[in-house]
Length: 584
Image (cartoon, rainbow, N blue to C red; front, side):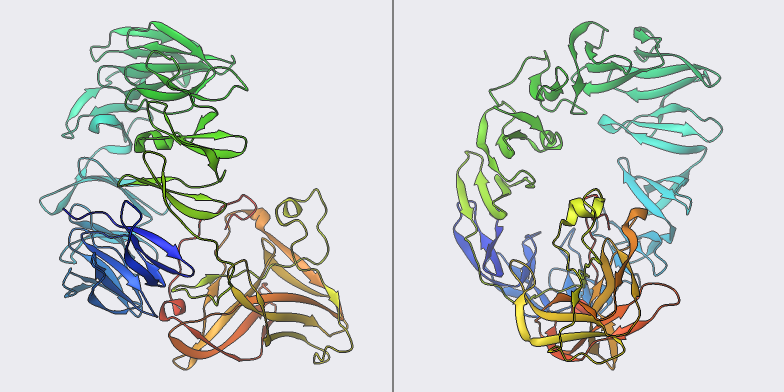
């Protein structure tokens, strides 16, 4: 049996340790992925290869990017060309698609050049064409295919290397234990229950009934008269009622362990009942959707801390704080808060780590170790609460060594934002403000200009070096720039293969409040910083600035020397928002 290894960080490099914190593979890599099927994708210089658990390079480092092995296949990129290889590094087939997921049960989801999704098998055969806006997989080999309107176009079950369309259903809700609820195409109410073999287990022949949920022995359903709800109830599979509520403001949620939460939103508190409709306790809210291993998270009263309880609604253990992040119950642990810090407990309520971790830290349990952060530094904790490894403080700033396009970060303000503006609350006064051009600054007259001063090396952020950048207006007119979340449409470019290519990008924002304008008055300038990139390819760099509107202008900076990695020329990563004021 292969012993699990864990990524650790030392200065700007990564390596692997074992469950006791012993270094097994020294930190010599710029990037590394977790081991999967005995191999890990690593990047030491500009290109990715694969190492085994002894640290030996078994697949040469020649790929712009490489992903983990799943079911004996890994997706790698030779330039922008995606191909699948086996654990020997042997070519399996080329993927003519923009991207592909890992294989699961012999299938992988692919995205075509138009941004639409399809499905291939392990021979590269296209089983579902790339014409769908979204594809969702459920148990029982059931797939939902969505059209451009984000409506379900078809339901299909994968069997014998073919998708078989399930006729007559247009919506689905997956439940526990493999059950599926479906809505018939000619009925606007959920009315069909499938069992784990995808056979009809229950059909509400009464068109006025709507099935809300199905538990192992009970059904939650609603009775309608036209569009008016008459009641919500809990019945067995023979339609015998055990509980019924005639209030139109009531909802019933199944919590597992034969427990149901009934809440009338005209009242502060709801109740917990069992499968026979018998009252167990009154609570304000059930924070967790389900009981896991006999425990759940509930809030007994408004403004009280949430707590861990058993199926009799009695507190479990002695957790000093408010239990939160109920997703962790399914992972086998509990996260709680106290005085602005996070702690970890097991499902018996025994505290593993006292509340002292970062408030916004992510906590992941894998192979017996918790990975989290303390003072923004990663650390591993075992299930006895012992810290087995913690990242050492590193105050040295270094050039930025990445394998994908970086996010554009040239944020500015034409004046200090008003204290009531959302942007003020997020950025405060950290945004660069316009400053008067001084006579000693030798900017060219009568133009908008961007100048990169590579002689002025400074901190881009807490860990990265950068270069001084000036954006100056030496004209006699006010210049308006369109911005997104305060960021200019301004990115670094690299010269490769006889053309200039962006190595930074601004992800599109879904929030209309993100978009606005900033102004730069005559004879004023912004002082900015761009990253100092480093990589395997020496090249020329420059900055491209666009005014951001359809009939605007584009300005280019001076050209300067630098180096990048090949993936920066084409690869973008999924951006995850961390703040409502940074939604893109």
